[in-house]
Image (cartoon, rainbow, N blue to C red; front, side, top):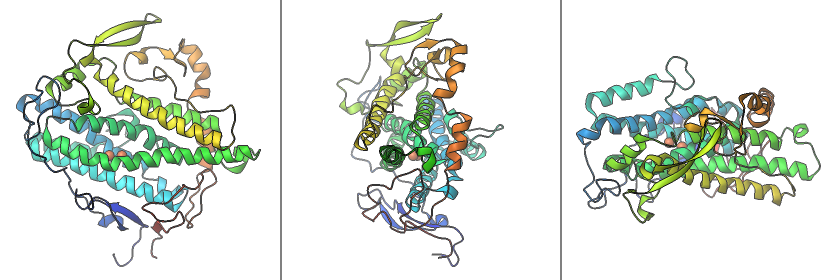
Length: 432
Ligand SMILES: [Fe+2]
Ligand SMILES: [Fe+2]
């Protein structure tokens, strides 16, 4: 420990090796001392490519010349999201709802920082000079910058309250899980081994998001059961929670890319990016099959059958949506358990509020019904985060740094981290 820590000292999980007992070492760590290792899941014998046209051929230890540009682009796009999320979240510590949550924020942030490091390592090690230049660019871009923004939209959105943070960790980081899972299948072995290790850490981020929302819902439901008005108690009403859900879910749907994509087909064919849990599928070529889509055309929805390989973004999105629905079901159980009748949260239709792909060319309501631009505008504030919501949610963000205490809008977690009690000193105050 340093002499005079001027920053809070969280109790963090630090990966010190990829062995089962090495990747989760818990201790108090001053942030500047956090260890940024590069971890690759160990090689297990000769790996072969598990899908696409190169099925069964040995996986590549070096970048094949013909896939160099595509692989670089895939790695840069993934890498760019890691520091972006830290930039988005960098002011949240000041208004943490508890030191338990503050500790989780630090944990998520150091790991995202390390993920950038791991991806930059691939660029430096395997892509020569253009890899080094791309790595420099990763440092030059900034979330929300008008000049050099981050590559993907959701990573330029402001996150200045904890409801946004939990929704981000639930929905946007979950896109990361599916992208990483698709890259963990890659024929480029160093990428597959790097992303496999990152996935073990991502699981905690998703837990922080899903359970964070769950605790916000629990607090609101508890007050409603007592016949109290959530707003009067500094909690967040259900309609605001629903709008935050709508906004972050749909922004995150866009991250999967267009419904029909020749890039996605090429990446699959070449063995660069597979499907979610490709190993569990019955066949790995995805040839001669099609995927049925409904797309807007001249003011109505028409059916289209596209070759399965061209629908790979949508295939991955299907898995993601299922996973999100599971979490929403959990939140609704929390509502019901707390005696809230007749009210529930719901995922909006995947056509709603899209900025990418064919659905972005028309307007839809949260049930997926097509509507005019004017109709959409008239209802927008009921469906998406509005100014009053932002103001209200911000007004209940007050930093709570006393052991075991929680802010007014959130219930305590069911249990602590790593077997510690909920009122454990998860973060030591600066100078203590
Ligand atoms: Fe990450
Ligand atoms: Fe993450």
